[in-house]
Image (cartoon, rainbow, N blue to C red; front, side, top):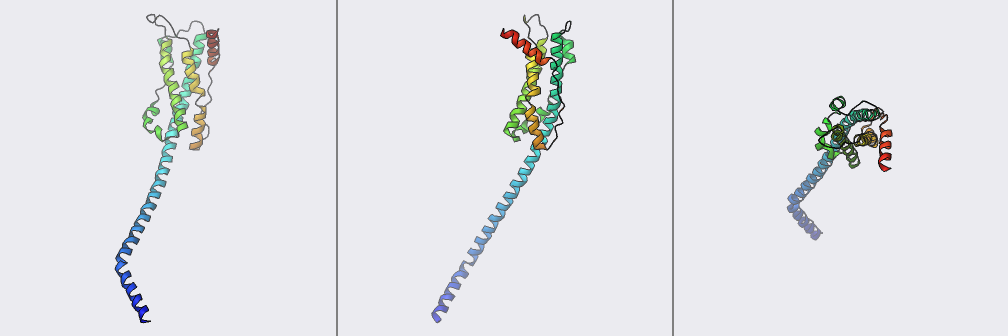
Amino acid sequence: MGVLILHAYALYSELKGWQSGIGSLLGFIALMVGALWNFRLNRRRDAALRAEEVVSVAAALYGEIALLRIEAANIARAVANAFLAEGIRFDTHFLSAHQISEPMLYKALASKLGILPADLIIGITEFYSHIQQLKIWLPLLVDNPERGYGYGPTCVLIPARDAVFDVDPTLRYIERICGMRNTAQPVNLGAAEGVIDMEEHTHAS
């Protein structure tokens, strides 16, 4: 019995010497658990903020794209009608009457496009690429004697058509992630597609 007491006392003495070490270990474990928990909470908070920013950026671009689609369709109809009509020339007056707005929101939010899903980025950048092509080619319809040659209407009509129709899946995508209804107005290209088909058939013959 005395031996057991001596062993118990020796164990108690040894544990008493380890007490500060055990306390430090438990404190370290508690600190690590707290740090991991805070990291998890911060990650969840950051993910929520990121999701909100994605929705904000996508919704802003949705509005601008919807307006630019209408303007692109208006220009396509005007170019097609002028090409088919007698007495309407592509001149500076025509250009002044048919302008497309600068994509101000796209330029302002360009640095934030990287937060969007990859498929959405591709659809958005393709749309604005079509708009840029439309802006570049429209002035080239004006006759320039120094140039010695002219450009056909399809150089404007094709990017306008692609801007109007190719962006539809992107708009539906934005509506889904933003919980929006389809608010984009329907667009009508008028005779534009007929002129494209006619010109492509003529050049293919």
